[in-house]
Length: 193
Image 1 (spheres, one colour):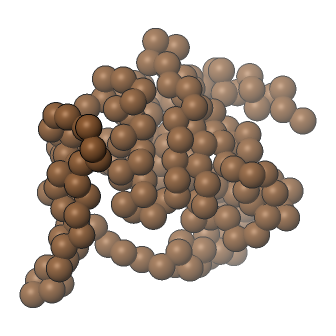
Image 2: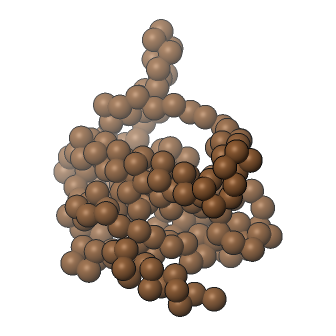
C-alpha cells in the first residue's frame, strides 16, 4: 500500500513532493523521503507528557519536552534537505511545514514571519498534539514548540529559543510561537504579563 504525496498543480522542481509514503507490509515498515516513520497515537504523547510531569515536576517536564522537540526539529530539516526540499525562501519553508508537519500529524502549520537576516520566525499552528482542552491558563505545546525551534535554528545555522504567545490549550484560536535569538526571546518573556 502507498499513499501519494504528489506535487500540487503548478509546483516545479525537485521539492521531494513527488515521493510517496510507503507501507511495506512484508517488512512491517513505513517510510517517506528515504526515512523510516512510525505512527503513534496522540494519547502516547499525552502519556509521555504526564509521566514526565509526575516523575520530575512540571518545570523539568516542560524543559525535557522542549529539548527533545528541538532535537527532532533539527532532524526534520535534515530529512527535508535529503528529500530535495529547498530552504531558500519563506515559501520553501512553508512547503516543508505543510508537507512534513501534516504528514506526521503535528497539525496545520503557517509561517507568519520568517527572516533569516534577523534570525527571527513567527509560526502558527492549529490542532497541535499537546492540546487536550481549551481551558488552561498557560501554553502547553512545549514539544511542538521545541520541534519548530530546532528546525528554524537548523535552517538559520544557530541555536535559537522560543516563546509560545498563543495556545489553543488556553482557549486561543490558534497556537503561535516566536522563535529568535535567546537574548530577544528572554526580553519578550520578561515583558509578557
